[in-house]
Every structure is written in C-alpha cells, then in structure tokens.
Length: 77
Image 1 (cartoon, rainbow, N blue to C red):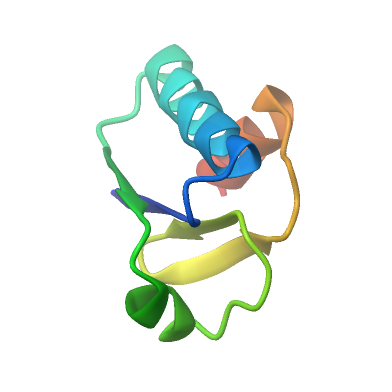
Image 2: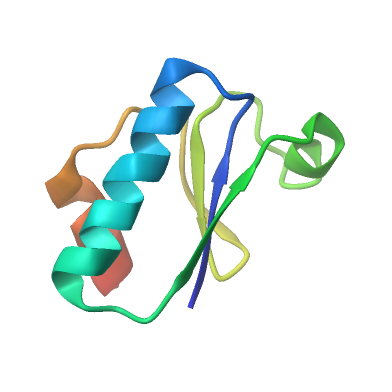
C-alpha cells in the first residue's frame, strides 16, 4: 500500500502525516507513507485544499484534519 500526504508543510499537513504513520503502525499494515510538498505534483491530484490523504493513488480526503480513528477507517477500506 502506498499512502501520500499532500500538503505544503503547514501544521495540519504535518499532523496528518504523523497521525497516518501512527494509524499504519497500530493497524500493522505494510505501507509506504510519503509526504508530498511539491505544489505541481499536488495539483496533479486535482486537490484544492490541503492536507489531502491519498491511498494507492486515490484521494480519500482533502482539506480536513482527520483524527486517528478516521484515518484508520480509511485505511481499512
């Protein structure tokens, strides 16, 4: 599984990155978690508000600060 956090490095983006890493760890999922801060690459996902969560190249959340439980639920899908 490949997970990307799209964001410019703002506090919300950093928080989502840390929350996602924690969720992956707690669920015992084998996943690569990447933080993407390049605006050109972020725009390729048609995301207009960050942070955004991308799982296997599919945007599953955008513009929201997700809780640990919310991230876990998205990863289980």
